[in-house]
Image (cartoon, rainbow, N blue to C red; front, side, top):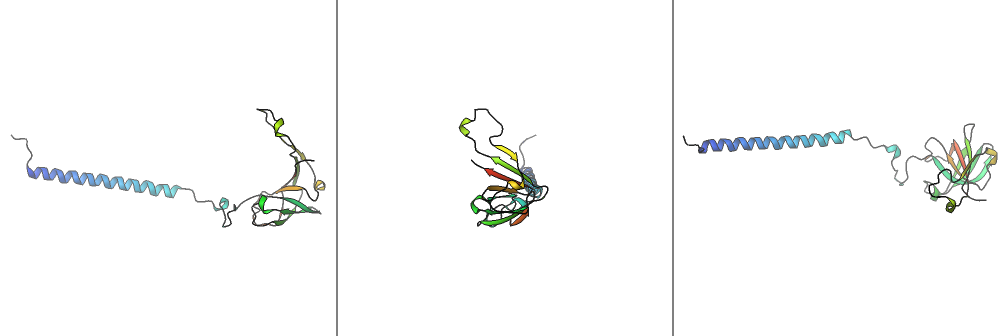
Length: 166
């Protein structure tokens, strides 16, 4: 018997091969689409709480840096300059204190050239102070545990007096 293919059998094999190739391509497209769709649905939602607002500043921050203008009856008033804070203009902030407010003095008067290689530890001294130690003209960082963006009055959880030199 002759093993050469007849034209009808050859046409049938070409059609079968074409169908198989099209099915495989269709399966690959379906799998790729499913994977892409699954990736998009599994992405965590964008957290607008930590994003940026229209002015380019973070929507959440917890502190202001400023100079004490007034100390009065459990409350201080500071001038928070825009260039040191997430503010569009210099702003007066009224900071209340309560029994939970921690007061800390930080003496940052140190010579970096005296630090030995491999030395670690505190490079500035931190001391606990009280409300009575706050004076007009001191630079302070006022901190809350809640978002202070847009607030011009809040109760601080921590007030750090920054002493750069004496």
